[in-house]
Image (cartoon, rainbow, N blue to C red; front, side, top):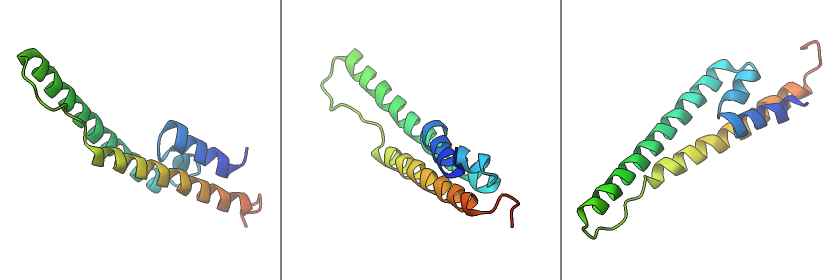
Length: 103
């Protein structure tokens, strides 16, 4: 399998940044992983807070608008994920063009 495809699939389907790590761009890959995981925590935290708020509203029998997780967290995660896939593909494509002996 071409490195470009392998890198893009790993970053797109498993974890953003994993494609970079497999392609030996360690610093870039771990940095992307850290940012993506931070966005995931931000998003999940917002979703849990919204669920807790909705549960509190249901148990108190009051009418309140439904709570929603942070849209900014979702879009930040989506942007990081898409950028990781494109970056991994570009790194892999550059490596695919290199001769087998590395020169």
